Every structure is written in C-alpha cells, then in structure tokens.
Image (tube, rainbow, N blue to C red):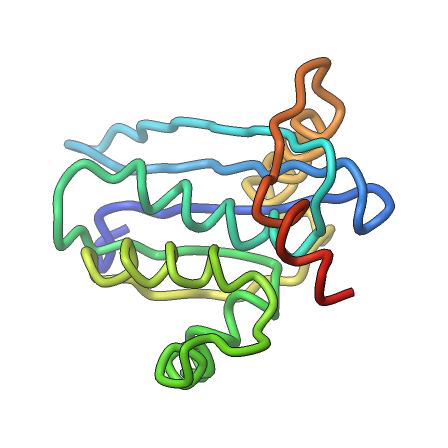
Length: 162
C-alpha cells in the first residue's frame, strides 16, 4: 500500500437489471503495519447493476475523511473504470451529460473524485480475488435486505429514457 493511503474495493449487483440491487464496499488502510478494514453495503428496491457499481465507488470515496487522500479504487466494472481512466466521463461532463444514463451518479462521482488523488484498477470479477468476492457478498446482502432504499433518481428520471 505504499503508493496509496487507502484501497477501496467495490462491487454492485442487481437481480433483474432493473430489479432489486445493492452495492458492497471494502476499504483497507495500513497504519504502522496493521491493516484496518471497514465494510459498507446498501440495497435498493429498483435499480440497475451499473448504478450499483458506480454508487459503490462514490460511497467509498465519500467515506474518506481527509482531502487529497491517495486512493486506489479496485472494481470489476469496466463501465466505471473505463469511463474514468479513458476520460469519457469528462467529455460527458463538458456536454452537460445530455442523454447520458446515470448522470446523477456521474456528477456525484466527479465531485468526490476531485477531492482526492484517485487511481483506478480493473480486475476480473468472480475470479477468487478475496476483497472483490467479499464486495460481491455484501452487494447481494444489500439487495436481499428486508428494508430496501429507494433509488429515486432511477425510478423517476432514468425510466423516462427506457
């Protein structure tokens, strides 16, 4: 972890896509040789897999307490990783996110992304990566929670584009 102060592992899930969904986040940092870990998850009654993948990254970054944290985000979502690493999201921003799905989340990501020094790493999902597998478990737990949150933007706005 010498290049990054924090590693954030993320995953999203949706059964039905759209359907019930959830995200999972595992955050790790090393302080004086000891690993500290936190986990977060949440479920939604109607959403998509891409929204949950994106929301997982946002929630992880929003949990960081200090500005300019050097962080590595590890995700199995090409949608999220490529959009940032290849710079597509910045082009969408310049065009006002016109006709762009998940614009609410992309805008939210850019706000928190700019507060830190963020690198992204894509990994293959369901490939026995311990933190990614744990995030998947958390995301599914979220999607199966007895109490599911409302993804109001998706339910009210995104469905107009369908």
